[in-house]
Image (tube, rainbow, N blue to C red; front, top):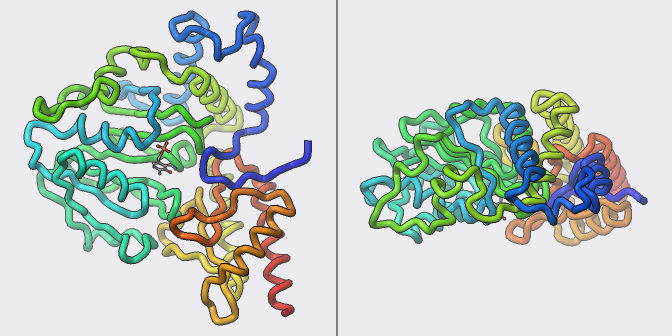
Amino acid sequence: MSKTWNFGAGPAVMPHSVLVKAQKELVDYRGSGMSVMELSHRSKEFDDIINNAEANLRKLMGIPSNYKVLFLQGGATAQFSSVFLNLVGDDINRPCDYMVSGGWSDKAAAEAKKLGANVNYVFNTKSEGFTRIPPKSEWKLSPNASYLYFCDNETVHGVEFQEVPKVNCPIVCDMSSNILSRKVDVSKYDVIMAGAQKNIGPAGLTIVIIKENLIGTRLNPKVPCPLYLNYKTHGANRSLYNTPPTFGIYMAGLVFEWLLSIGGVDAISEINSRKANRLYSTINKYSNVYKAVVSPDCRSRMNVPFRVIDASGKPSKELEAEFLKGAVARRMVQLKGHRSVGGIRASIYNAMPEEGVEFLCKYMEEFARQKAKL
Ligand code: PMP
């Protein structure tokens, strides 16, 4: 098989060894005579799969015992609603604090607003093109918020938080695109949610890690919470109230085993830092051709957006098209920036080997040198 380097933002690259293992087991899951896809979610085999996946995720992230792990459907998008409906509390007028550092937190805030939330923007950098995280001195926190919401890593804009905000209310964090990429102290969060299709497995699975005392305790009778979106439904039934995304959970379990086998989050975190440093330093070295748009103190280690610029320093759609064409010719795919921002974006999740980043950087160097000659 010829090698394609997939820099897609999600669905994204999977660890090769995980795919090979899944392939081996696909038709006959460990002697059951059935595919994982055919197993009942109430079978002994599947019970082992979901229990192992949960145990290994707990091990990888050091999830305290007073947190539940939920395996859901609906993507992180469904969580935009769930968060508000479950945490609104008695008083719907109490502010819900949102830090808007990119397109995804912006969408989450808009959804909560639509459902009736009194959204307070702690900050919103949309008018600046989402290129920085303002210093604390600029934050407008509510003294009595129902919760504080933020997106740890903005997949489209490439903005990543470097610390957990310190507040007195529950903290909700969208970790869709950087979960398991570095060590986090789960006890500093109240709800962590993540779509699987970046660092965990195939699309279709969403993971929620939630402090037990928030499950079912902050619902508001005047704000009906659909059965599926209610954390209580899943928390009380070990994610088996209805049919969970069984194949996705199985694949996530294999990814967790892979991550443990290579040394866990500490090991991958080091690798991720090396990959990001290599890429950002290539962008910086050839600053006459490439430009990183995000402020250096919050540049994402997972999604690296940059522009290809012309001699006057302006982003050039023509040069970017040429860059992308050359990349595809070398079998590097999905490097086109999100349609809302343009430019180039390289997503370099856990499963992207250092070799892939090296291959991209070599091409960037070659492209830049060629431009310098003209
Ligand atoms: N949050 C972030 C940070 C994302 O990257 C995405 C999807 N790319 C979403 C939320 C939405 O997730 P989903 O497509 O799983 O609903």
